[in-house]
Image (cartoon, rainbow, N blue to C red; front, side, top):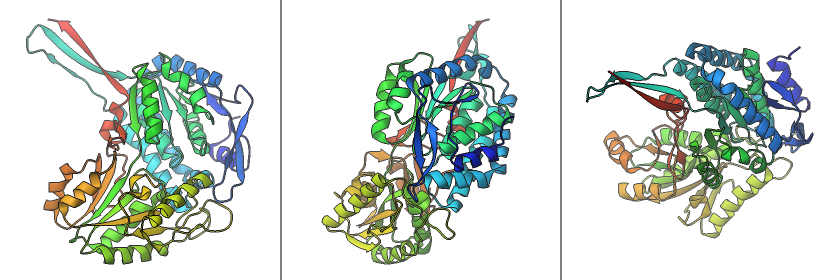
Length: 490
């Protein structure tokens, strides 16, 4: 008898080893090996997960390929109903999912509940988009042919997700893939595979056919999923992660001329003009910097503040950052959980140390705490040199470097002085100014007097080295659809 979703999650939290999900079956890895998943708040092992092999990768692709024709032929309403059923089931088990996310990723339970709400919404949104896939029909201008344009699923898709939003990144890719009629292989991050397995359990429970979703866990993605990129059966790659890895995957995908979606790194500027409402700007800065412990590609990376309000902003912002409570995600009152692992914590602290060596002043935070877990305090730096690594690199932690600017042109130049172009934030009362500079800011998304812009109904994605394509919104499903033109003689 199949266990319930709640029992499945409880078994993971109680240490029961987790299998791969291939062709509608839960199965150990072909080599029999497993790897450990740790709680970043304690360093203790939560459970063991199947260590997928290249043979398992081939089995996943074979299952996705075999299921593609029948899944692609299902009606839009069937696909919509299954997605809506998955939304309902995840929502019904929101607390169970939140506990699982906190256990393997570290964020507070409050933030984990927020991720469940956000992540589930992708399934509801794309359930509604599934029935709106359209085409067109008409006569060509020459009058010689009738034109029929249809939209068809791209085909089997490899979906590679990051560790920072283990539920939302899975649903943000699975939602449009399933809505469009594509089968999939999901390769979750090795640090946080458990939530994705629980999502697969949800889809199994609501009746998604065997082979449509396959989950492949591994610590060696190059060996396990790498060969899939040159296999002609695979037709689509969607990746969320670092820019260097994304570039390498694009090079591999070129051999098969795969359709690619890439959501890569970010270095978001947070611009505060002299006319900004400073209370609102500080509220937005807290949201943009500390959401998900700062471990988000949309996190504000560089705070650019007009020199007339620089000192007051720093004072207010640092006071708020200093009040944030650091602790285990499941402890009441925690604002900032641990970073994902010790390597990440050491890297973040290295960025702070480099900035200080270059003349920055630590206004608050900046010290490694004692004790177990990968914790790091909310940190504000002022007087930061533009050459500091904390400015030129993606931080991925609760550290806020503040720089000042003199005028609008300098603000735009500083904001654009990066290879990344995912998101930016602007705080100003003068909306004429905002409208004027928005086209000059080289970012795929822009928050105006708002510190969080992500929403399932909006297109998420960047320009330059921040990626290709969009996820979410009406645009998200386009990434999984091809056009077919049929010319019919009159």
